[in-house]
Amino acid sequence: MKKGILFLILFLSGCTYRNPLEKADFRFQTLVVPPYVLSGWYRISKQGEPLTVYVEGYEVPPSATVREQAVKDKGGNVAYIARPCQYFQTSVCAKEISSIESDRIVLKGIEQLKKKAATNEVTVKGIK
Image 1: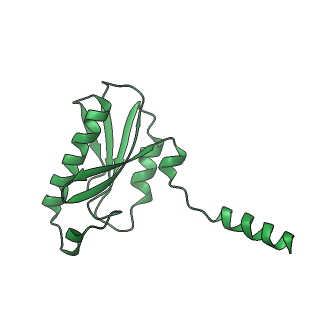
Image 2: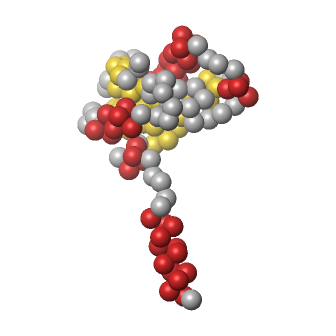
């Protein structure tokens, strides 16, 4: 019986999902752009230096390619940001968001990441 429980615990622990960004030492941050909440991950090691931000496209589920590009980027300041309603669903997510509005919200989220990196120099990649 004990072996069966141990096997079950080991099996289930192998099934846990870990975001590839977390594996690459990115830190998670919620970016509040009322009334939306965006998911952001960042790796900032060089305050004041340029920031490269990878932005998810419009497809759901999120593209592993955009996340993989962020993970592979060896720059000192790298971030990944999701689109509105992609990970956090709020009551406003019930209505459709135009691509222009989505871009505006994401840009406000990027402003928060710029402050974290103490930079005004940003390169944005991955927008469709």
